[in-house]
Image (spheres, rainbow, N blue to C red):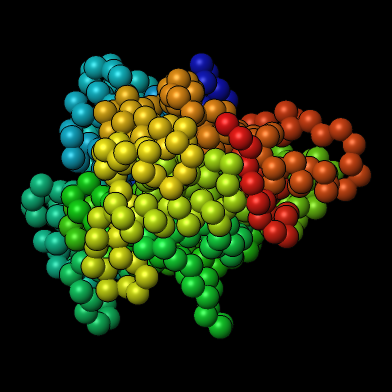
Length: 502
């Protein structure tokens, strides 16, 4: 589909057109097809008649197609697809910028704030994004707002003024004008007929994921690690597992509840049902982006399986759990604190200590959901604790407080914006933070696709249990070693009891 020039994927028209002609759903969200004769852009799998090659151009982002004067197809809804794996996993400036834009940084801090987070001047950042993505940061943010608004218009009964506010528009007029320009429809036309009313702060959405998606296996990972007060996993007869947790968001707290069911490979694009309850609707885009990170929703499971499945030792594991994802997290600072708490103790032990930390130092939050009572303490709160009074060895308590101090001061940032290698180096410079902790944070907070934890006890047990045990070289699993890692963890009947000492 693409070739790389200086690490940047470029679209090959011949390969892209072949994907369009075959209506290959694997490329939905990877690129967009603009049709000159109709003035619309589509996803590759659009069921409409395939246009002639001379009449199409290909764009890496929806914003690029819109910048070129095309509007979204009403039939295939090209924005209702998972994001591109290139930008989800890429360590380039473009990939990092896309992740921050999805989190609403431009809406909150402007282009200048985005540029500062990435370490560039606004002008240079604009040049980089236009060269790599076909659109500048304002256009990319505008597309993000339009996509969020369309989903809210079509899936909720929020008043249009509330939708405009939640999607990040500065006025209702701007909201109306943008939807007419992008979708050639008014908000009323997009909404059509809707069902019963909902509470103003509750939003039911379907989050797009690439198929296959091992939702139940993700619930199995989260269940033994769920910390009392902030998260829970519940099971009901006949229903998929439900995962719920509190969220600390830019403008206020929130709660999300996810139904984690499996999506079969033939689904193309699947969906995870989510219910968000937000104190401030301006946090809608940020909440959705962070939950998508938790789900690893933009991963390409087909590409991962094709690569890892070539190893006879891993092939049975992939066949057992097709579409297994790397569990991300909604808050980088939180998972870093929990990683330190997990040093040299069992999963259950780490969960118990984290629960005590939440009960004693978390922010009380009345959610209306039994079992969800607090927000996890922020980095500044943890930084202010006395390490000698924490329920852990003194050296680990000092490491925890030192790391939280660096997080609170912005010396280490875990929001998927900074360069991953720089973040790892910053963590390793902190007292008491070794390779296991730094790499575990990279795995879950930064979404790094190529992390391996050779000293992890669970990994050692899983490697020893692989069939036909000969020498195993994890290096040949690159660049998808993170996915091999979670398959190894999932292969154990019982979670590992301890981790490495650091």
